[in-house]
Length: 143
Image (tube, rainbow, N blue to C red):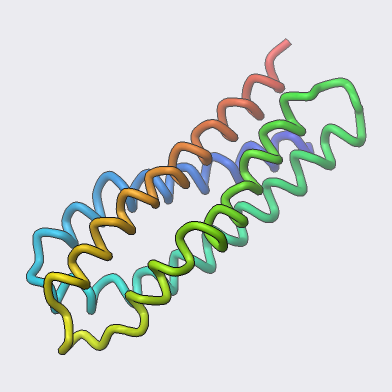
């Protein structure tokens, strides 16, 4: 059950991250600078809570599944990869997030658009980490 719960969290994380990277952010970037920034702010706040919770819970569950049976390193590896989203966000994306949050929508322009483009590129790494974690944990469930 622990491994299945870890898989569920990893798959939900990966799905949410993929949706943001593949659909929401490209659609946002078709808006004018002010509207794109204004849309990013509440979207980010809501998604951050969801994705941080899924990364933390799924990572802990993957590690717990490995610890419980100590026979399947795929669960531990998947849990660690999922948890890597947290330091990646804090160490790599955090400054971009802060700059975007500090920019009032009325001040949006080429600089905020460049930050949003950079944010989208950085977010793809989170998507790939989520997909990799899902694949690892799922592989661990195979005989």
